[in-house]
Length: 348
Figure 1 (cartoon, one colour):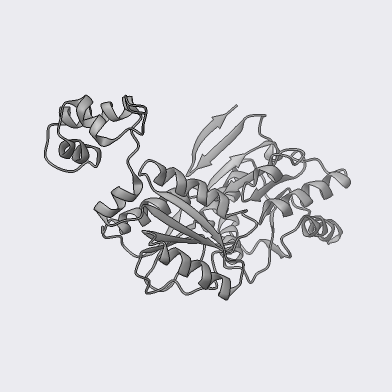
Figure 2: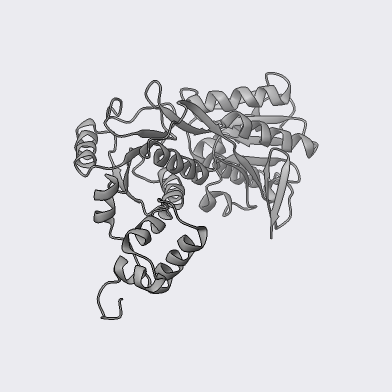
């Protein structure tokens, strides 16, 4: 509030800093020529007064709405909510707001939300989904605003961000090998998923041969059934199971416990996704590969802002590294260890 009890205006900031209104405006927008001391003095005055720039006025000056649209067909939010958290982190300090629209798999609904975003003159759009090898049910090519794809398939020549599934799988298998596990089996989801194929290929390369890959549905039930298959088959049983997601992993752990098989004493188990409400609540808590979706969101926010500001961004698919979150299902302590590229950080 200003001294008069109303909203703090830029005139109040300029008066406190002892500069003109034009200088105050340039200082707060990081434009114009002035000394670092003057710019810092204006910003300090703005902070002291609790000054908040008027978004509409700022938009008129810079011809921007300072809003970004987020379109997704992941209405459950399993993947999109972490991505959105990262986007918000990247944009909040820039005074940019994000509004989310769920399109399900409905082309008409997608077109409706897209038209609404364009009517609101968003500075850019981020598209996100529930799998990396499917496009949203709405055409986002040739729009008058920049588009960045995060955890969904983009159009040709787009900027697309995904997790490095192969690197994450390799990290998991190499961790099991370091623990001395020799017979590592991969229990995963439907082969129709691109991520499943990429993870399976990386698993085979890491174990140094064909290995054993069992495909099924994304469910605890399939994890339970896979253990039944492995324990009734002929030959040596696995001493480690690398699972395609955490739901499968929890089904595996439960099935092993029911058979009297110790986890991790007899069999080490690793999941994928690091879905905390599943991985940390499994008994014992489950080691899992984290796709770092929040980091993908932060990078998507940064890139769409650069594009909105007219800066050049190289198109193509960018794979961001996963990290391995080590819990007790592999024999770890109560501490949680995050491993990426052989580097560890432990959190008690």
